[in-house]
Length: 304
Picture 1 (cartoon, rainbow, N blue to C red):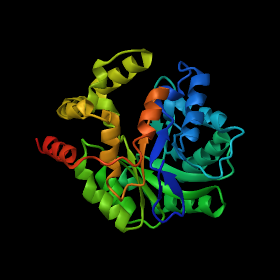
Picture 2 (picture 1 turned 90 degrees about the vertical axis):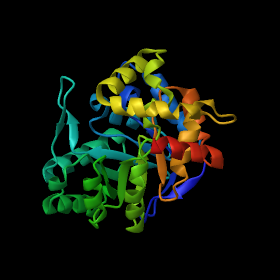
Picture 3 (picture 1 turned 180 degrees about the vertical axis):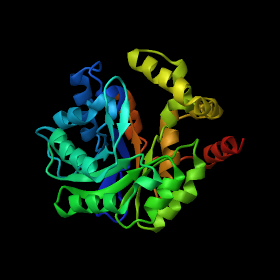
């Protein structure tokens, strides 16, 4: 595993990060397997773990805390998110008021068993919600030693642009993958401003390999339903990149991750999986270099 600095935070992260969310955090996914995946990621050299207060109906964050019990977390960058929360009945609610964000961060510390959050990110705020009062509350968390770095996770370029211009934020998390080459100028501006850049959805939710058509277990059915309901456009575009899964000597996932990590301004590509073999495969993408002809085919597919 290779490592990169996370902007100017002073933190260093593994090129491949592990996302603790979705099916991984749900009670229907056995606890022993979920914790085992985190332990396997640690053994593979992963040091960046991403979760959120609202993930898996609020179950992911405390599950990650249980996975980390008894482990040395001093060299890890544990990132969580605030601003959204599980409101029951499958609903996700939003509250970016200063008091709610502070309470969420304090709750996250308890859930994760940490004294300081290495990275706290606002989860999908609107530009208008990044108020002076909220920024002051975030800085207050930092002054109390409860948070080391602050960030914004958004797939809205306008919100990321605003965050780049705000000194309080150290990190931005953007949806960057082979389906999103248009994010590259935004990533470059963030890096030029000293922000650490995390690539969320680095595998484009598996759409390059038509994951929605491969059902081998209940988690596959769940992910397929989500993809077809929320991301039909990405599923269609992903079909153009099926060639990535026919390369010799590298898997489709590894090729997709190599594309993301070829961008020197990206600190970490975050993946999520509930299968050990996939985790091992994805971790092995660190340090891989795409042949020029594969990079050219990706560029051609992106233009079409």
